[in-house]
Image 1 (tube, rainbow, N blue to C red):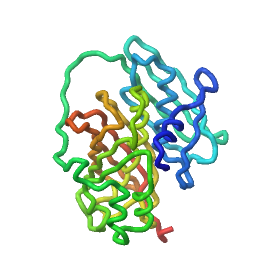
Image 2 (tube, helix red, strand yellow):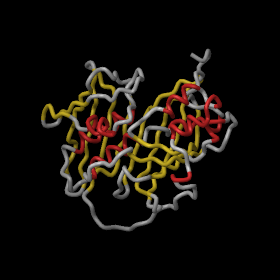
Image 3 (cartoon, rainbow, N blue to C red):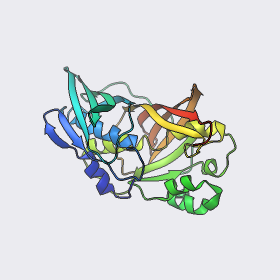
Image 4 (cartoon, helix red, strand yellow):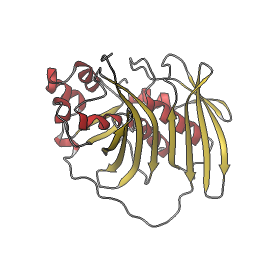
Amino acid sequence: MTGSVDELLACLDLARLDDDLFRGQSIETGWFRVFGGQVLGQALVAASRTVGASRPPHSLHAYFILAGDPAAPIDYAVDRIRDGRSFATRRVVAHQHGRAIFTLSASFHTDEEGLVHRIAMPDVPGPEALLDAPALAAQAGPSIPATMRTYLGRATPIALRPVEVQRYMSRDPREPRFHVWLRAGARLPDDPAIHRAVLAYASDLMLLDATLIPHGKTVFDAAIQSASLDHALWFHRPFRADEWLLYAQESPAASGGRGFARGSIFTREGELVASVAQEGLIRPTANGS
């Protein structure tokens, strides 16, 4: 991922090929596959453009089917499943090279009044007390693997400030919980749809890695084959993705070569604005290749 928020916004600004067909380009990451959060954000944009602004999305459920080719455009075909009085449902299939690589179902709901409650935000240090990811990588130096140091040290559109930094500097098994503050690296336009798409993009950045904390491993280990398999995201309240948000992550279980993680995303004021769940492949490799 490059450091330009403008590049991220351009990536999320899909070209409309037909009423329900959109095309997106990939951000250059240096990876051999498209970043899953990018496809999540683009698919959400495609679905949202077929629904009126008075019905924002409240949930999405996605499956990653094949690794995306970062050198080729991605076409997003939207199926208008239902338009009801209060809810609308969309299905999106992303295609590359004549094959489906990703599917998403999203539900949209007209704003209305109702009962309100939320869980409490974890008590963790604020972002000002923490190092950002590049500074953390520089301070850690050779105490963390080179691949992880490169990942944390490069510029990205999303600023990250991890709380439990010792997780990166030691291979000791720990409780499967992790907290990171995140926000867009620059001011975003005021359109709420852009903030939801940016949060969808960011929600896939570090979640799967939480499944490896109790095993003293990371997704950067050569002995682990990792990939997101599915992803679910629920939007609870309005928010700005260019203001600090706390991403509280935990992994309740792992088995069969798969790890399950879930996350809660809070504003600095303690409002729970989104919830996330993901299962991913965390397959141990026989030869570390």
